[in-house]
Length: 122
Image 1 (cartoon, helix red, strand yellow):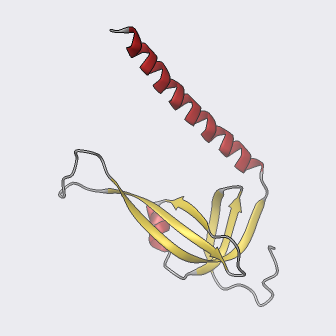
Image 2 (cartoon, rainbow, N blue to C red):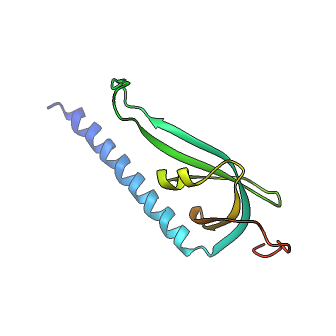
Image 3 (spheres, rainbow, N blue to C red):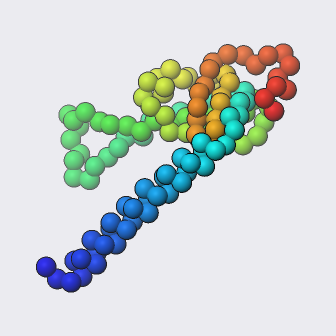
């Protein structure tokens, strides 16, 4: 094999190791953050197919990534999370509930109406 082949492989392995390291660092940072709850509304749901180049066969079972965007009831910046299919199916547009997050990670979402005194959790 030519010498440059090993260089290309080294670069690819380096990129994979770097991405894994970033994921571990993000999880550590998330775990160190306190839990934070706020009342939100489901503002957007996205079901995005995972396409594979050259595998465009309509008869094949398609795979999807599921995303949901939450908007705080009392205003503020929306947050978008990738979730599992079952969670996606349980959520509907404009559903209101209590969102619990830790850092950039969605911990839970429980549907319901905010209490009359919704200043709690702020």
